[in-house]
Length: 143
Image 1 (cartoon, helix red, strand yellow):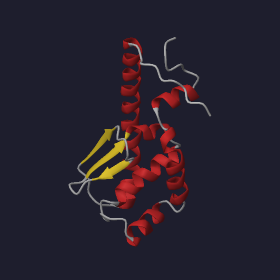
Image 2 (image 1 turned 120 degrees about the vertical axis):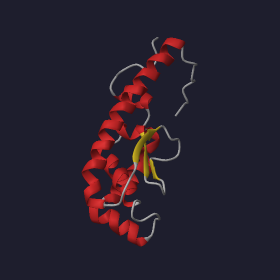
Image 3 (image 1 turned 60 degrees about the vertical axis):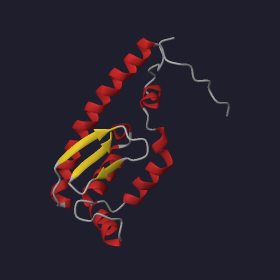
Image 4 (image 1 turned 180 degrees about the vertical axis):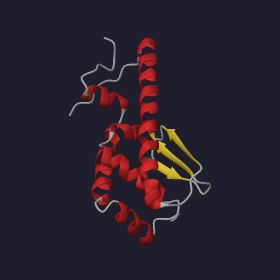
């Protein structure tokens, strides 16, 4: 498949995409916080805050101080995949590792988590604002 030549975005296009990204970040915050609230009573542990970022190589993280961080681009994933990442990070509140006990805890909340984990590994690179806009039929550039 031939690669598309990427042309620099005009200032107006860059501002438009920045505005759209801000809206999707806000939507991600609302959705992720809702799912954290839903799953937290099931997983237990204590968290101090939820942050939303645009991480290049992670979908989520859990600090030893209880900060849960999530990639805003999860908003473009199927809801069950977003739920998997939320459950994964919440389980780190009590299991700060990837031991057998950790994965058993994830499985106790989400028995089919391996399907979501595989989907994210295979399709995660597709979760971008530009791809989302294209899927909706919205032009990325203002040509």
